Length: 551
Image (cartoon, rainbow, N blue to C red; front, side):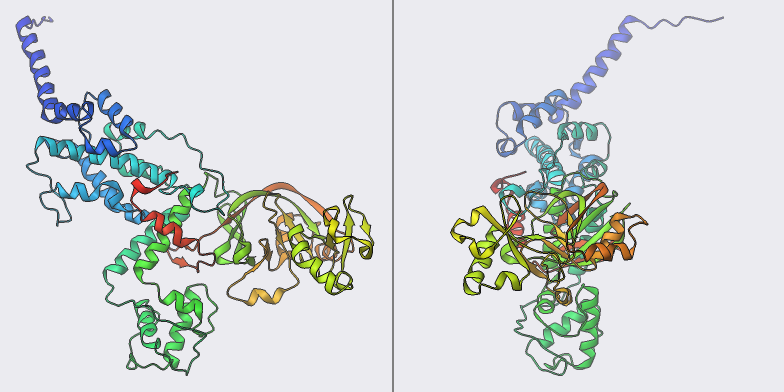
């Protein structure tokens, strides 16, 4: 037989009052102080923050319950948030931008790795809570969009601004509801393996730096040093080859002679760093060996920021990827490289911009329609000196309707009514084929008659377009049609009139400028900053956030 259990009304009231008392006690620990600080405009953190409205709103809706503290000390979430701030250096960011110094100053053991926060006053607890919250918003922004606004820094960065609708307040609500801070931040990383691989490579660089006992005074090298020659920079460069573990210590450590043992180590170093392993110490080798671990961390940091600037894209799709700084083109399918070629890029005063556009057609045996700037600056002065110049260069003049005209009767003072083009052929500056991805910068990929230039280590030599080695192989893999076999491609490349072939799909072409990346094996790769773009970005990255125009 069921019996009804009656609980006296008084007991229910006592229980309810006890629950209310418990929560009021929890709130009164620092919540009253938080509310006072946030509503009275007394908080220094709030006064300087770009997220003061969001911070006020989220605490108001929580009835000013803390997110990072528990019983006056850092909670599990608080410890994880502090760890994320400290580890932001692996993203190439500065932990000091996320209030690390102010947070550590509140610690009872600031010199220890595992920070404790004991015996804090009510005001210090409020400060610690708000410092961590503001750091969350700032770090979330910087991981998602980048710390620096590329529009204010790099005129050659032509990608569209990253579109986003991420609500950082909602992310913080998820953390307050039990989500991992680290997992939340990982969601904000660029959707490219290059980023996660780069992060691991930077971790390794910090480990290497921790064991660095070398001095890194700049070892100046002018010209080249060949094996058997002597130079004052040799002892320092030898020690650096040993530091990077491509050479073992041996007796002649202080010798200024470039000996055969060092020669073999240098070849390993060159091969490992994407250089021609000729065993000659030239400007590129000297520049590379002068980079300390900290220099390399800086270079890596710069390029992690560039990845954060990138618009969201499917990196596993079919694409043509050109790294300008590496002078290399990769044709990628489902994340794997199916074709690689050396390229020549724009010289210093005709820099190839970084952007993306869809490739839609190929032109075999192309005309070269010479840009007006080149016509004015180079062609017309050459014709005025040598009336046979156009004939010798297989060029012709056409009118505004594209019809050839007698060049001898052209009034060059009226050059706007005419344009010069070079006819198809082996001497054509575009070579025998061009690959078109229409864009406002008039940049495309093309062959070149000057194929000997691909043997050069530094290949910033063009007017801005991308010249490709082995263009016939590139055409074959893009066309992906048995009709377009080697013979037909060669025939199409050697015609007297140009032929346009439309691709059966549009293929994204992505031009990047990356002086650092890490491959799938975790190996860090560094390249020379041929356009000197890294210096300005590093300076901006190392500025305090208050002095920056954010994205």
